Length: 111
Image 1 (cartoon, one colour):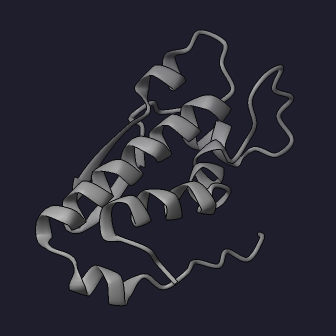
Image 2: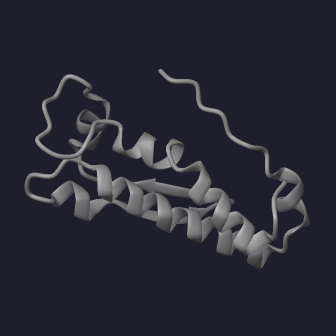
């Protein structure tokens, strides 16, 4: 598995208000949902349409309740005519610049 490196935003988040934090988490959740839907393999669009997000316990959670989603997410060997395996992981790890831009819009400039 590729190493995932995240920038530490804890100083900015600690200074932010609860309203700002919730706005940021909701924004990140919406972005992650969008990125996952753009990359998910589709046949009937059931899996794509099931991807959603929620904000709970200071986390943005992106997911689906479709029972075969883990197989599609984790199966590198599957031949997808469109989309990619790891669509959820990629939605979180492959868009750091976009997430940073949202954070800066809501929390202010991040150094």
